[in-house]
Amino acid sequence: MTIGTIAFLLWAVITTATAVYYYQEYASANQRYNEYYQKYTSIRGSVLQVSVTIDYGNGTSITNEAVYLSPNTTVLDVLKAVAKVDTTYWTAFGSFLIDAINGVANNAGNNNRWWVYSVNGEHALVSADQYKLRDGDHVEWKYEKY
Image (cartoon, rainbow, N blue to C red):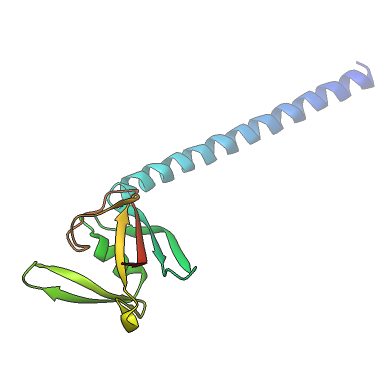
């Protein structure tokens, strides 16, 4: 055997051993990922992820991209999760009226601005405490002039 052949065989053995090592590491990491993914998807199925935007009507807007809440969550619940909310319960309608969000009140100083909300770009026809959210919904609160 020549030195070249010995060097080639040594190179082949080292390369093969390295490839086997990295394949085993890949397979182990892939298995850990799959286990994590299974746990994540089972947990993920038991919560809602929604996003919320609060537009103050003066150029200031705050968006919370990922708010996680339990199923049967309402628009009011998710708003309370991201902001300080003042409400009044109206027994005649059996629902809550939003009076203020983060200290910005409806019709403050007779400015004819009121808090209104939409879900996925459509104005809702029920109060915020009556609208049940679905996974992936986007809620937008706007302080609009009427």
